[in-house]
Length: 396
Image 1: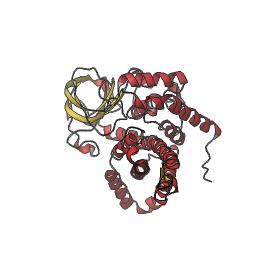
Image 2 (image 1 turned 90 degrees about the horizontal axis):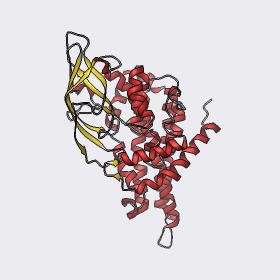
Image 3 (image 1 turned 135 degrees about the vertical axis):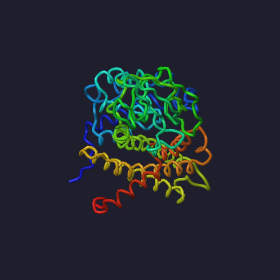
Image 4 (image 1 turned 45 degrees about the horizontal axis):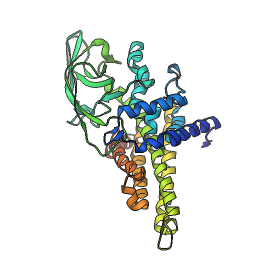
């Protein structure tokens, strides 16, 4: 039997997070430290301190690191609550890219690596990046990876260029994907490396001007110029970066969906209140069929998105890898929630394109969400290939 009831203890945690975000974090949405490149480090530090004081910081961390270690289904409930403000996940330390990086480090980092690079991120003392995407196309198509690591038997020397690296400015924990060149000393192929962001050879060229502004310090263009790392800097095994990336990306797609579901629900609540109180042609906007239908379409889309997320989380909790399921959910949820945000802007009219409410910002961020962790078209391509390979399995 399928049970959609949220257990009372989980509901209590959800309500605690939602109240914290609404009461303590929402007021910061007008803070000037929320810049066109997202919240700056000073604002992040202040928000994290509030979550730490409330006992909610990094609640999703494994128990061995002091977290609550919620299941994927439980995360779906809690992350939606966190997403009520786009600053909520920043404060709670469950925002991208740190949330996904903590997940993969918790899975494959050795004890020394975890102590040096994972624990400070869990504690909110430093940020992390996942340096994969490149100007030439490596990202959605990792086979185009050009950044190269040359191994001499003792050290790796890395050269290459990355862009759209979220949070690069000021981050300390760096996960770098590079292709190890064929060598006489060991295996080759795409590999993950761990290093400190202050290591010589990491050059932040600039922070890109993008339409979204929900990630700390925005998205950077980075050059690796003879970045020299010891053999101990390898994360996991040489040549296994693409497998590890998939291990990270399947749950990360879903946590994106969870957080943005919370933001879309916030936009809907603002639109509903506006429709109730704003009048036009002698009656409240809500009594005009065109407006009421938009609100109804939003409510349908929000619940459909919620159920789709829960289903994919259920498959992960049962031990599935979830690549196919997470692609389906990311594709449909990102598109539907963008439409929700768009309709909220329409209901609000001129207010919707201003900073008088957070709806305009949510709309801009939601447009970018359609590209995060793979654009819709790439996911549909992967879904179609799976369906054509295993038509019966995909239909069950």
